Amino acid sequence: MGAIDDDDVSAMRKLRQIRNKAVHNLLGFVCGEDRSTYQEDLKTMVKLIEKLDRWWIMEVETPCNADYDGVDVDASRVVSGRVSILKGLIHLASSNQEVSDFELRKSAER
Image 1 (tube, rainbow, N blue to C red):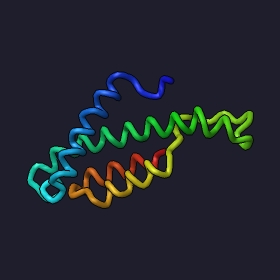
Image 2: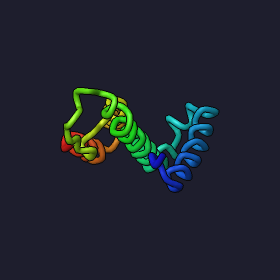
Image 3: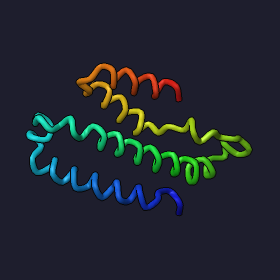
Image 4: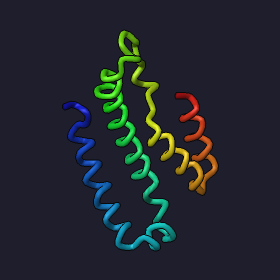
């Protein structure tokens, strides 16, 4: 339906492997020295969720809601509650203040 592309599917497969590894060794995943290697993967996951949520809101929820009839919704400004919460949790959990500040500013700009 055009919500995701082949690159997104490949990224999801990689993220599933990481998730499976984390589930079977949660303490090592959360507290281990290599946890910082997953920061980019975490960003990728949030971007995919954001992309899917935005698609759902724009293609399903908005057209089904009469309150938006005739309203031009700027898709680039659409953020789901789930993505806002994820970004907030990442901000709280981040051990790098510069990254946290950047993510917080980026979220506020939307």
